[in-house]
Length: 315
Image (tube, rainbow, N blue to C red; front, side):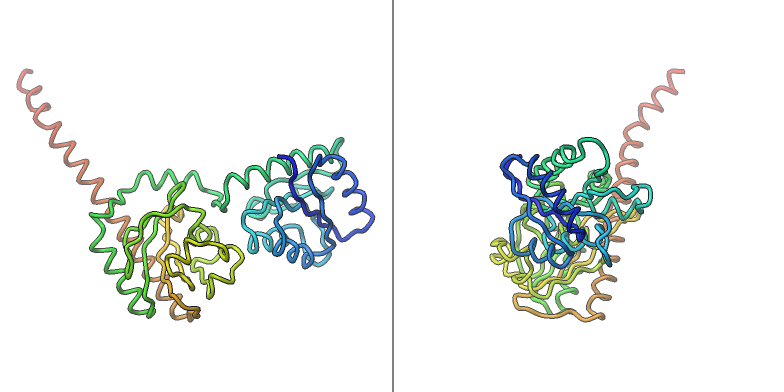
């Protein structure tokens, strides 16, 4: 990927200058911009198209992981690469995996060339996947494949939940959403008759990677992730509250959401109510799946029974 725009973040002026010189020599037609602090880097990413952020680990009062989390909040599609001499064994495994895409040791031979290769790969991958995915994405998709989520069979029960959600939270819209590999599908909608949307156009694909199990966006139009999202405007979504649907394996397969056409807040009680209803929804989906599996097993057993009796008579 040529022409990538990269932000390099390091508070040490001499180290920053040396790294910028090395990176610019490797970057072909790409642009490498400097930043000396987390605040400067966050502001740059918020205001400018950026393909990748490269950061030193030690940023004074902050770390490269802190910066990566800030970048993810502002522009989830931007990848972050740690470029440092700090020992990788000192990093918390889960923090590393959740925050940054890759680590490059700046003290290794040809470190700058290796770094630019990683930057190009990260920028290309993020361009192809224009939305964040959970660390356990493949397990999540495998679990979804095992679930019977037939909208017609679930419609009546799930509609009661969306009706109750809208009534209690005083919103015109509510839905139960399932996040598939490339799409968001609706098991039930209150106040609308929505068809599946592309995953990158949905708020819920961001909600399922949020650290909070209830995600609230008071004004979608002011959120940089969605300010140019025409699909959400067409659906009449201005504010959003979504609670994860997390199954017993600890995997989040979707969300229970409430939406308003106007900017609004959601209280702690609203969030707690939504969380409770999301748990009820998950229990319903798991029970439905168990009943379906038992029904299939019984049908298989009944089909096999005549053959078994016939075989026994011949003996």
